[in-house]
Image (cartoon, rainbow, N blue to C red; front, side):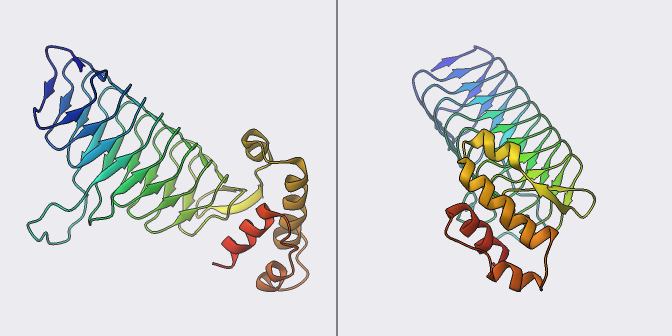
Length: 248
């Protein structure tokens, strides 16, 4: 461990030998940090928090804080936080431990920008971009390859589908289907997220199939929503994923 002399590191934390810990950072008992991770100045890692390899935690981030809930506590410390590999967590990000035994979870290769909040029991997949000031309420689920614009918010228990784009300042109070763009207060589906799909490397044939499915369900729907989804050609795996989410 390469810790600055001013850092406060508990002897009961488990830290890989090559982890770098900057000035005035605080690492408390029970924390586990994997190889190649860098904890920059003034970051605080607390609670039952496990951080994987090659992460970068920027100044004044607080990871592993108690859940912000008003439920009566039973005197036990069950909550935890699990963070995967290759994440970048920027300044003033706060991530809370879970309110029960299943951890708050962040996957791998995510960029979580300054001032964002990840509440208790949230699950974030991998390859997501979460812009400045995004607020994820308790038990929200963010699937892989999702991108958020700044100061967007997600209500409790809402799911954001894979490869969705949530526009800046959008307020999501209901589930967002995979592969779409949502925008506005009480966010509504606006378009297919073609740019995000292309960046992800989704085959052109699948994008074409998704365009056809999107039009059938959201643009030129000739029947009820449920019937339009039921009539989709689900041979393409991405269309099948979209249909499954819409029927959930």
